[in-house]
Amino acid sequence: MLKTELKHYFPDVTCRAYIANPFSVDPADLPVGTGEQEELIDIQADEGAKTKHKECSPINFWVSMASSYLTLARHAVPQLLIFPYTWECEQGFSAMLTIKSKSRNRLAAPGHDFRCTVSKVMPHIDQLVEKKQMQPSH
View 1 (cartoon, rainbow, N blue to C red):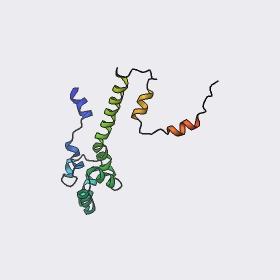
View 2 (cartoon, one colour):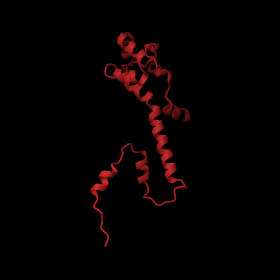
View 3 (tube, rainbow, N blue to C red):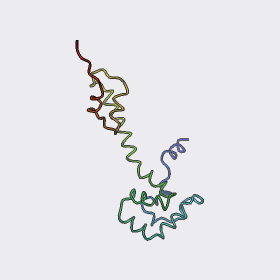
View 4 (cartoon, helix red, strand yellow):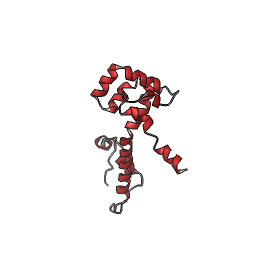
């Protein structure tokens, strides 16, 4: 049971060896009937793709090939983007640890700090202040 669970989270990387270099992999090693073999044969015959592969990084290569070789690119791009997703997840945990630590000694509404910390949207404080009407003192 543990072995099947680990295979779910860590799939066999040998069948996806074409992600790093599609020109050094035998198409017979890929699963039959998924369209990957045919696309790998086509991409290996494409001189423009070979040139592009030498010129740019693997992620840029597969993004540029997505329109021509959709099946291969659909598997390659998520594999190459694992690090940014992991980094964002770790950033969220780190932000939550900072928010919930004992060093924070002020009262705050739970959850609001976390959303502001993890969000990539920058608030327009000046515009928000202008929209609020100031309460005059008596």
